[in-house]
Length: 138
Image (cartoon, one colour):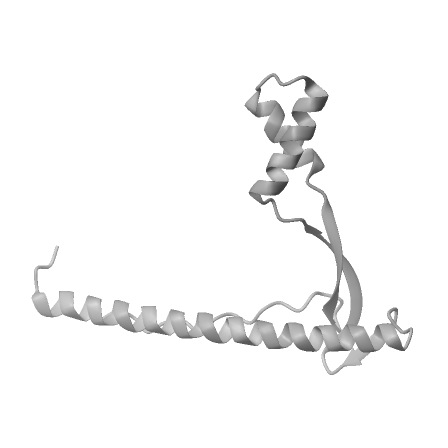
């Protein structure tokens, strides 16, 4: 282990820089997703209003189409309580944690939402580009 205070200070400065960079990217990513979701809703609304939900939209590197995804409902404490009341009423009130968890998982349910799905010309889903690599530590 190197006890050089200059090296340690460099580690700290690099960590701070990378932490700030990660924070900035996170904020930018969140904002970009919010804006993307707004445009996605506008596109889907337009396609719905014009009765063209099954349309395939040709884009430069592939196509866009509306797909329906299964999105699990939130498992809030209120939902858990309601499910537990149903479970205990049905089962008779004996407390068996494994049974309760299996019951919750089995009856959670899902919502279906419409999303845009991007497919490249090669038939593969568009993958995210790799993130730039940080500079080496000094």
